[in-house]
Amino acid sequence: MILIFDIYFSDSDSDEEEVNLSCVVKQSWMKRKHLLEHDFAVTSWALSILPEIQDDVRLNLDCDKRMAIERVTVKLHVAPNSNSKIVNDKIDVVIDTFWKEFGHFQNKTGVYGMCPGSFLLPDALNGNSYLWHEPYLLPYTSVLGFVGCRVTSKRLGIGLAARSWADIKLIKDGKRSNLGGTSLEKRTILFNSAKLREANITQMLLIMALLNSLVMKT
Image 1 (cartoon, helix red, strand yellow):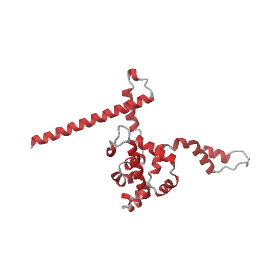
Image 2: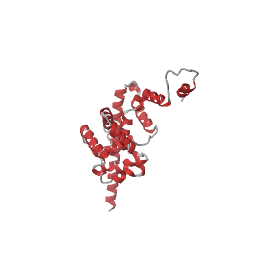
Image 3: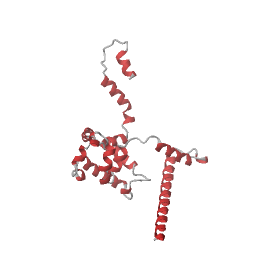
Image 4: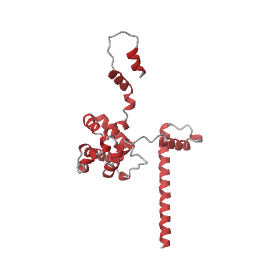
């Protein structure tokens, strides 16, 4: 806003170059494009349910954007992978499954061709993609719904970052306080994976204890 104010209300009387609001917005966007047009933003754009954005995706989905979407899909399926539908699948199979499901979603074919009215619901017309994806995309797809619900959902605040930092503080202790970024990232993944396994084992033991108690009562 300060930049626009300076342009329109400066004391300069030079008319050599006409500057309007659209030029200012375009210049500001080009300066920040590499920061704002990141992989997750591109994937969210591609999986938006808003009709106008879907039309834009059909016109502008090029190779660079497809590669950005694939990078996000890979990131969401590295260990620890919470997508239970494709736990044992190789990453090439995951990518292939994503694009097949995306084709049906974009062209309204397959399971989406049987329910064309779902694309006219209020959540779809208002662009509430994360609310639409949960009932209409997640149950019918192996990869696309999993990715779509995550990249189009509302921000969750700093809770996830705070929990990650708590894990890092447990790892970077004593002689390991000078760990580099790459090593720290790998150790954090291993730490979180171990914690998930520990939680799963504890849950299974509790279930088994409950079943045993029920058997003894009968």
